[in-house]
Structures are given as C-alpha cells and as structure tokens.
Figure 1 (cartoon, helix red, strand yellow):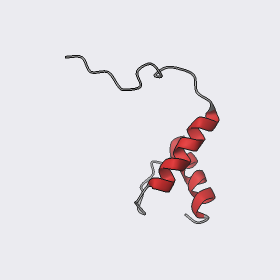
Figure 2 (cartoon, rainbow, N blue to C red):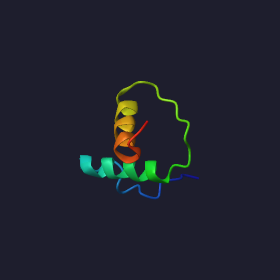
Figure 3 (tube, rainbow, N blue to C red):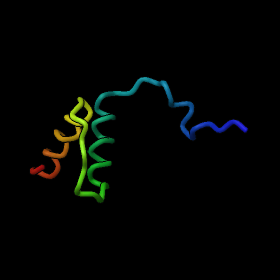
Figure 4 (cartoon, rainbow, N blue to C red):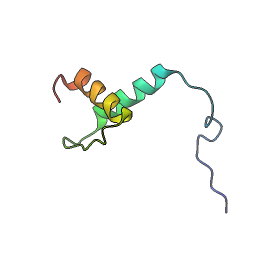
Length: 58
C-alpha cells in the first residue's frame, strides 16, 4: 500500500516567504507549551524572533 500526503500536489511548489512567516506565527499562537529547547541554528533564531514579536518577552 502506498500512502501519499493529503497535500501531495502542493509539495515541491514554490511558496512565498510571507506564507512561512504567517504559519510560524500561527503555530506559536496555538502552541500550549512554555518550555522550549532550541538548537541554536537559523531556524531557532527565527522562532525566537517571532516569539519576541508575539509575546514581547522570551
């Protein structure tokens, strides 16, 4: 049995940077966790940046 993701048509399609930002912010708003661990890479830096915009304190 072969299983495909529900959005298989969208996979590999170009997306705008703004769409990534909107999704990260949406996830942070919905996240019910106050203790996060970061690796220190670029992705962690971006998440910390968005958290400072949303929560005003990290």
